[in-house]
Image (cartoon, rainbow, N blue to C red; front, top):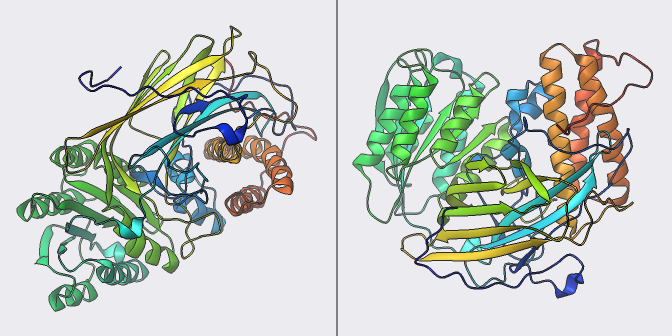
Length: 540
């Protein structure tokens, strides 16, 4: 367990699930158990654990209706490519949907951030039947938020280098979207911010250096961007980092924004070397955010670059997304809320830790998990109905999947949370104790939820896993297998929505139905009148 032993940890009250909701103090306890038996629609009960599933997300969303704004990680911020392929009548592959991106487009109402610090951690546990075959599943949902109003946060000046793919494939709509987005983003910058523009085709070239937002040269250069050549992504990224380094100043945010519609085709094309470049510069404090244009870019490379570069990844699928990504999200990610964030999780005897969803920055061994997040950023979404010019999202959190072992219940685990206040050496620490009133494998008939946020988070997780399973089966040519996942899932989601109003989940339901329609349009059909739904989390 990673701790700073020279810093005392203040004792925190333990809160158990059998206390009344109004008595709970969110920062003090991770009351745990609760998502049981939401929808046992489709078959026999079995465990919710699969050692092969070790990704996916938890809380998403920006602001909380209960107070404060959510704090999000970098990495994928949407699942726009997955949606776009479905809207075009296609069958998306499993690589087009990412756990973090999917859950980042779901708003969750966290408790008020009353911990007295800039960032508060919240945790809820639930027990619930999964939405594909009804098997028991135990999870802990973890989210972070802040009492700071994003509009009032005084962010440091920005030293930004923009690297734009100018390969021939960017001609037409892709480059039009980039021009529009960069001109809109320029309007959102502060007077002291500085921007360098790099274009890359067969090679990289610096177009404008260290310009302010009102620079006529910068505006003219953006409007005059013209595609040419191939895609030397390595050269473009390297040049962008070198330019960022050239103008870096202490106390400034030093970042690169990479925009591309394709895959590397010339120069150094090895993904490991390109990712190594981003990781090396990130270690020097230079962040990287990536934006994918069109449907043919290397989504795994762009996503990995953002994660290694302590930044975000976005997909621009339409003009509405251009407005959102360039003028709002790009502004938001420049606001550092916390640095060197550590979540040290211990699961006690009586449960096994099976998987951690919602972060790529995790190491697990036995019943321990260590999450090391370089930077937390403020999200700005105000609620599930705030679709931000067509996109959803703006936050992030995690889900820990646990497997009861049949031993004594009670104490479930502990979260030890710490972060460094940006620009200082001050380290803030919080501790959350997790406990449960339920017996091993106990599954109340209607489920047991500490909060609505826990229930919604579990629904999101089930939909994500259903999408990923269906996409994997379809990619292997098993359209029937994909349908046996989606058909019970759509019934479960419809049933949940009949008792719960939620615009995020309603939108998800649209895409589940569209996925089914596309499979059937391409000849997919179940092989029997009453197919047995697969187990999304087989108990090994």
